[in-house]
Amino acid sequence: MDVVLSYADEYVLTPYVYSTSWPEDNPLRQILSLFLVTNIGGYVLYFIAATLSYWFLFDKRLLKHPLILKNQIRREIIYTCKSIPVMSAPTISIFFLEVRGYGKLYDNVGDTRLGWFGIILSVATFILFTDMCIYWIHRGLHHKLVYKYIHKAHHIWKVPTPFASHAFHPVDGFLQSCPYHIYPFLFPLHKFTYLGLFVFVNFWTVSIHDGYYRVPDTFKPIVNGSAHHTDHHLFYNFNYGQFFTLWDRIGKTFRNPSAFEGNGPMVEALKAINLTDENKNTTKNKAD
Image 1 (tube, helix red, strand yellow):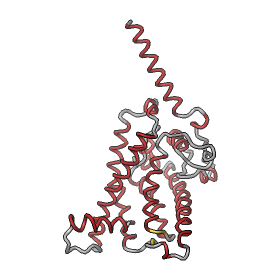
Image 2 (cartoon, rainbow, N blue to C red; image 1 turned 30 degrees about the horizontal axis):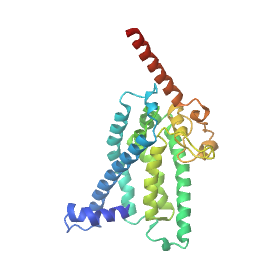
Image 3 (cartoon, helix red, strand yellow; image 1 turned 90 degrees about the horizontal axis):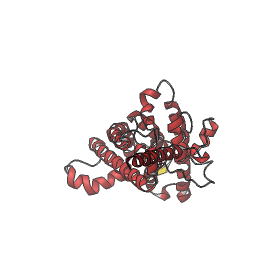
């Protein structure tokens, strides 16, 4: 995050926001700056990713599903907007430690003996490590002692839209994001690679809520996509994974998506649409 903070200082904060006499490495200034950057960045990423997904991927027919709530998209957006600032508070504390140099982030590809191979390796291990951790955190959030207090709020959206992607209870959102922040304290990671991965995981979080169930057959048994995650919203105790189905298979919580078996949410949505059309035709015929 110090990369983003550095650019923000150079082009916005130092010339236009703070007094030039306030050093850029002052801890209080860094905390305030991180609060601004994290919140603005969070909102921008959420609205760009969710809006693009909604307009270009999400099948609007799903909005006719019987389990879609009244004003659901509006409620998803409001819930997210309220959660992001609260979620950002503990996140900023971790970013602050990164900025102060406590992690294993490095600046240049040549700073490690692995070079470019190290970049490729870190991307792979980052995804595998966070996928494993999020599976167990997510599964833990379904424990009866914590579910109704923290995670239940996210399951209000039985048939989610892309705007439900970040509509978490703040504690829930922070806990599930922790693996992304923990990784660079345990393993070396290139700073720009970390930034790229941070953007990627936000887009991925939107993608598993986008209602786009068409996946190449080769990837269906491996990748945890929207079809898997929608079934998680519907049936609760299955498909906890983030990127892959591996840990669901190991933990015996894997469920083959109903959308792949021809009886997914779209079936109920189409039934509702057909019923509405039939009622309209009946009303019209009576009027004639």
